[in-house]
Amino acid sequence: MSFEVEGKLHKKFDKEQKSGTFQTREFVILDESTQYPQHIKFQLVQDRCEIIDNIEEGTNVKVYFDLRGREWQGKYFTNLQAWRVEAAGQESKPKAAPGDFPSTPPMTSDEGGSYDDLPF
Image (cartoon, rainbow, N blue to C red):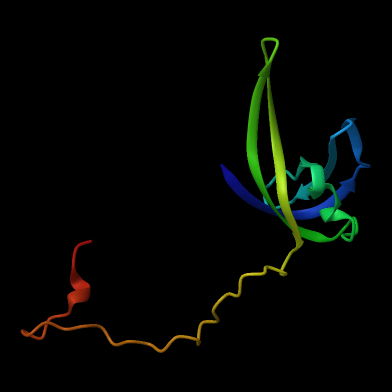
């Protein structure tokens, strides 16, 4: 499952070498879009640990992440595994401006009625 959320980069933690071939890094964003601000912790793994190196704490960011879960010895763990972090407003996909597309008049039927009055 893939999700995204925007917030302010609150805290960056150092990388942790979990084994000879596996590393992680955690960071926290502050989401103030609700009545009660939320501190949300994410995890980066392997080569993605560096993607927040150039982002300063206090910067508004957009985090793309997957929801991960696992069981270990009868206990269940949930993790928000980030795979992309960018400064808010820096999306790589261009968005169309309202005036980019020509407006098309509504289609009409032979009887002069509009096709836009369909019930669905």
